[in-house]
Length: 373
Image (cartoon, rainbow, N blue to C red; front, top):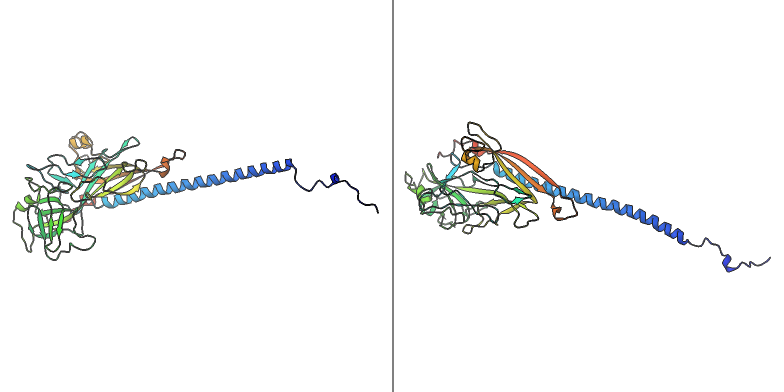
């Protein structure tokens, strides 16, 4: 048998891959990976879209829910006519109203009272070229309602024995608003101090909202005290105090211009220092806030009234008569939001709007079983 004498270069050629085969395999793999990565990118983008849409809609719902809850209480527990007297006449000055950062809202000079509904159309920040609205509303707090008083001076009142005012979440504290009333005489005050053992509430001058004006000719605590009959310090009492909540809604695009927020503000936030940055953000990336009102004036009963200067002057929706804030019976709310990725120049910005209508039940009905004003 002859030995195998093949030369080394005669070895089998199927021992590996050729360069061409490797290049083809790499090309196929590159195409497959490109398709896979494109699919994964689409999944990530779609997931981001869903998250942004969900966050935007959730923000809208949370903001609208809070507004609706507050609007249902507007005017409740207030006197017939749904107004409270404020300092007026000689020695008085306008009271301050909450608003967005940088604003300085006040009541109109000479106004003798403040209404349960106080619209500020178009006086909020301008966002996307649209001037937003501001709304301040008043309602009584049922946790401290029609509490009898045993004594009162021009700047203090003493609460009747047995009234709990020093414990619990509803205790009386500085910064809260109070309505003192006797018969048809009323006044709105801001608490600046409380002495629990003596059951005494103090309303010192220089308060944040400028409500405590003891030197004013009318609409203050001294005027209520001077109203006949004299205060009775035992049952049957004739002078009472009720806690009032002043709730203001507006947009703030000053704190974070890229993410405007819906702010809910209770009273002022501090008893002695007026601060338009003290509100609580309740929804983020809100870009539009609009309030329109339905009015029952017994004549034209206009709907979707803006309550602008023309409406109040008698040349607008209620012409020939001026629109009256105390005739408002419904509020139409529009809240607009945008997705949080609006600051990303490579991402799409999504927008949505939520609308609602709320009846002011406290402006329509009077509880005949309460103490008569």
